[in-house]
Length: 69
Image (cartoon, rainbow, N blue to C red; front, side):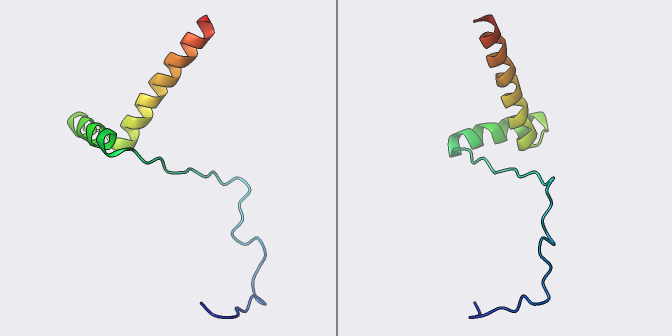
């Protein structure tokens, strides 16, 4: 790194986007990744889509149980 940088021509907020959405990665444990990857391959789906579909089903299940209780 340089000791000093010249920001005299910089524009404040040039890369700021107030409506930007940030998604943080989720890392699967190796055994879960292996299982889900094999299942995704068998079904011809993208791993990310399969994991999201599974999570959505679990969310719906949890919400239905919570509404009963």
